[in-house]
Image (tube, rainbow, N blue to C red; front, side, top):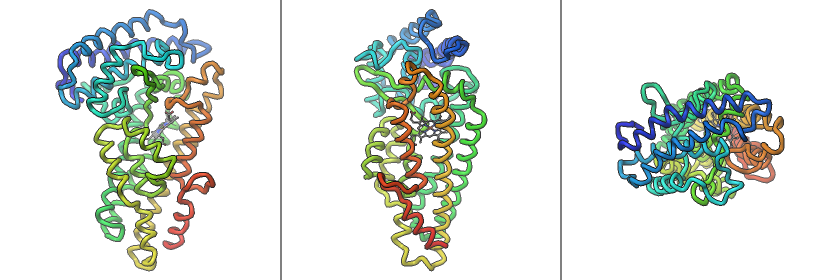
Length: 394
Ligand code: HEM
């Protein structure tokens, strides 16, 4: 989001977010992390917390009084992200907590976020896109909460992962108007496979290089739910982009009408940019590539069928691997493991999406099992259909 497009107040706020805000959060993180109970924030660095609250408030009141959201989408989106980063930090430092309040104690920030969110058609909080795919760097400085190297690693690798999955989804979406029997579809399957191989390397890099405790204690807490006005908005997560769901739907691993998955799609739409919302809605109307292939099973002996079927299965297998990595490696190492070490008083506050950890893990398991087409009795995965396609292709 080019700052050149900002009005004067928005530009000043953006500068503050990229400088003092990062400095204050980083100092607070170092204080928390030095304690034997790293999860404790109570009574630590109160002067810094106060400077953070007051610093952002000044900018926000100026913007809120201007009441101007008319500098175009980029500017509105950028201001929404900055207000959201500020509110996310207030939540992280326990200057607000949705469990003990029935409305946000920050009415000006809430009103500004609600105004902009409604104007551009997004949830009134910071979204993944603000720190990932739309994190505009000014002279090499991208936005972040802190200057900790593990936060940059997380932000950068999330962005790379999102871009890789988005590329894979776009390649598959281009097959739809060509049809699976068109020879050119093979190029697109191949291009999707290459992007997924890249996503696998990115996941592995995060698994190997991210510091478990730094991530859990100093990065993850900024992604908690918080109140805007009266409502609680769930935390941002790296899944808030269209590509992941386009892959699910185009590969046919679940359906937009599946009772569980339909709810998930509706819940996440407003956490995406309007561009991604449009892409996802489009994809919800397409037939899946798996259904297209199985519908042509009568041609299973044809050369084109064998090749297209094998190309589909290669992509589906690679996608399954990314899902296994996410759940069995990343979620396990960076969320479940350190949560086991936490005292009960902190555990309640762990997940970005809000539900208690065991409930969240069960929900993520379902997604992994859709994506790996695992056999399950309680949800409709495509285990049998994928097995059938393997047989037809072999
Ligand atoms: C959601 C953990 C990196 C894609 C989630 C959730 C957790 C989580 C706990 C559930 C929602 C929440 O509470 O936030 C992690 C950890 C990561 C990581 C610990 C690395 C340290 C990534 C990356 C991607 C990704 C690199 C790929 C771009 C997703 C998706 C969702 C999600 C798509 C939404 C649920 C789904 O559709 O599977 N993640 N994640 N995550 N994450 Fe990650």
